[in-house]
Length: 217
Image (tube, rainbow, N blue to C red; front, side, top):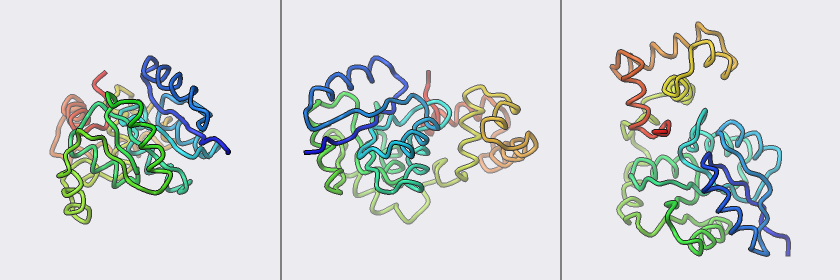
């Protein structure tokens, strides 16, 4: 039997090392790569085409939800399970909207992770037990409507720019990272501020953290 090929995307080394140690003991699972940033994850997944990606929601550069959108637009056969410390409804809903099939809290038992991997490989959705069933009901009710979150108010490019700004990147650094001009970044920043009615980098940073676009660290 061919082992399931797993890619781990997480910027916390201790958590990632521990997870890999446990997965390496499973005969029917093979960890093919580890990544620490969203853009790196997108690139690696497209190159290696793993069966399952264990994706941290909060990662530098490009968060896990945006990375999921990009991956599934390019490599639709990949199954993605989100890993997070947050049980907030917004993170779960936006992860499902992005195309993830699983959402696990990082304090879940390893046995539940194995169950989730099997479930998503069968095309089923698997959510951590502590996440209330109402989350699923909310998702169904709101899937076609705007939730008012950053994921519905801002475009994908605007969210990328906002995350990089919140992470302290300069306009020039952001432009280089996204391969666009400085003027384009400035235009996006103005549009973001206008849409959100925010007036400073500090306010943008607070908003990005609150909406889960960038980690607190």
